[in-house]
Length: 186
Image 1 (cartoon, rainbow, N blue to C red):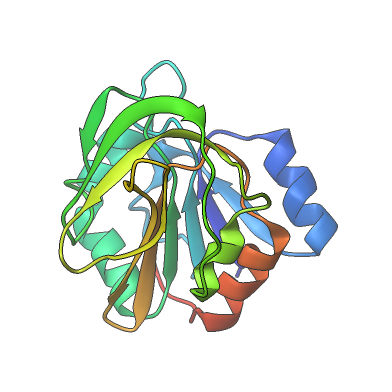
Image 2 (image 1 turned 180 degrees about the horizontal axis):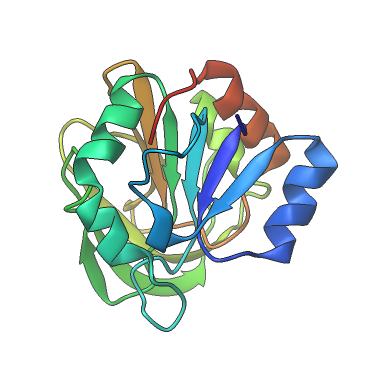
């Protein structure tokens, strides 16, 4: 079992990040999602650009895997999803309503006491947009225009964290997410 699944094509920057932390990870090509032979994972990360066909082939697989994603989180997994990098996106493959609007820029964010705000490495992150969250989500961080850039929702025994921050997650966040997750099938 690997700690984290990254739904993406191989990325050497992610390899370095997780390698430096001593965390086991596995890149999952969108083509193999749904295989009964996949191991359990504590966390799943979906990097920026997952809905943009110029960067990734993940979106059709995510839509096909909606019930698996829901079950993974319900059973205690932590799902972290970044911006889709398209003009607008409805996360119709998530079990809870969430929308995204693309708007690139550097934001100044106020500190938050929420534990998952440790995702940020800086108080002036690059963002690729903002989120419009359904009522199940809590807003953790907002941009300068009072729009959500980091949200979270408890779902079953697990957690969904969504962000439009266009940067790698901080090491502290990765450790936090793994500490609260339970291994589950994707």
